[in-house]
Image (tube, rainbow over all chains, first blue to last red; front, side, top):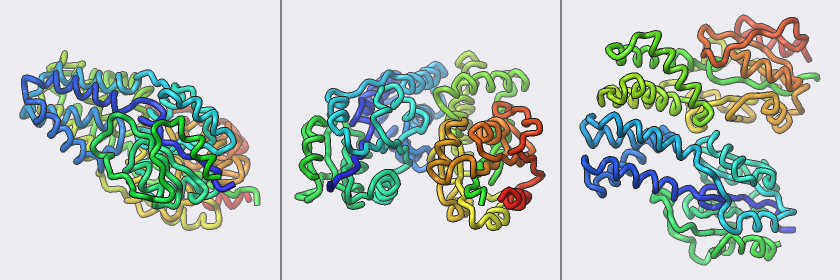
Length: 230
Length: 230
């Protein structure tokens, strides 16, 4: 059998994530409306997030800190206390947001029985563990890897550790930048399942005519594609 | 050989950590001096940290958010913006604080050559990876496990994955609660190396007369103790 292992991204592949960030960001824009115009706010938040990524990494806690920092910078340190308290509360709500598998996910994972399923995700360690537990999908995975960055060496290491190497693995996710391109670079197959929203940071062009790449319409197409490789 | 694997805690075992939290906390107390007395502040911060631990987990980002939340609560949402900006800066400084191995660490790890060394630590994923890289100790470890909680099942899983099981492993760290008691419960040996400061959350009594436990004066005593078990 050519394929032994299937890696799956979590956020926006198995469950909603970016939508929750967008909702919080919309609330932030509303709360800050009297201090700055929407586009100025969005640009500033992106700038602060990008600057802090190196220190905070991915996830809700860093995003919350970056929202507060943006508020301080745009108000010359005069953001109202009520606003800061609201941002803290928004962050806590994101961390305790209910998690439900996206349509078709449970069915697709069930059909992949027989392959070693590995969850490979970025973000806050505890939060990702909690989301997996809340999703009810935990038992379907042979291994879970929460990583600080997804590059080719990440996929090489993870598929070597939990499978039979990248050459016999498929990676499936919604981010070209984090799930598809580095997995292909590591020698794995990669299936892109788009999600309607994508964080600007995760955008990248699709690979053109790559022999180990598939663009799928939905995660329900993953099991037949994986089987077709075997 | 009875022992194959040595697990090591990171913060306050390999490098300073609690001292950096204490310095930041002292700065927080100073910044908040006009709003509340020291003991009130400390008690409130502990309460907020404890309440948030379930959502934030361990690490600097959660601590920073908890300091800001404490400031808001103690000022009835009227904390001055300058103070919030200072707390954000303090958090970023903690995340970029230089990391130096504690005295004796490099020597001790070098003397443990031949055993599989596994770093087992809690905290923010990216920050712990960065501290390990900055410490220069990364190459000495066969594996690194950054975990959201250290309980008996954590040690069972980690020593099974990276060694030959807990029964042939030693865990070494400064926290009775996180490093020693759960490792003993998992069936491993455990060596306590005290650090002058300890976070209240990590306090626990030493095991009494446990056959697999040693209280060491310093990490330099770890290699001879491990060898004595083999």
